[in-house]
Image (cartoon, rainbow, N blue to C red):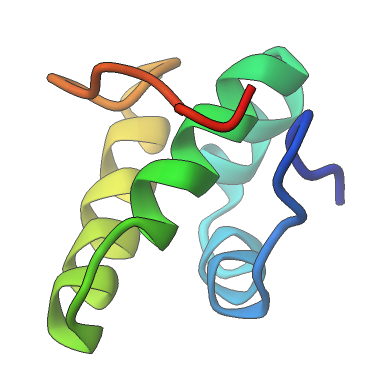
Amino acid sequence: MPGGVVHDLPADLRRALTANPKALATWGDITPLARNEWICWIESAKKAETRTRRIDWGCSDLQAGKRRPCCWPGCPHR
């Protein structure tokens, strides 16, 4: 399963995507730069609860066909 441009796919996000076929299909269809944005948004969470919530929310958004995280200014690492 592909990661982003700068960020590797974390194991917890990989597990969540694998458990959600529709989210996984969108993940496979978006660009590496878009995947990078999702990964960076999730990894920027400071608390474990926030990270878990972002993974759940992200999978839900990907399942709905959204290609980028909402209201995210973008990955500062690229």
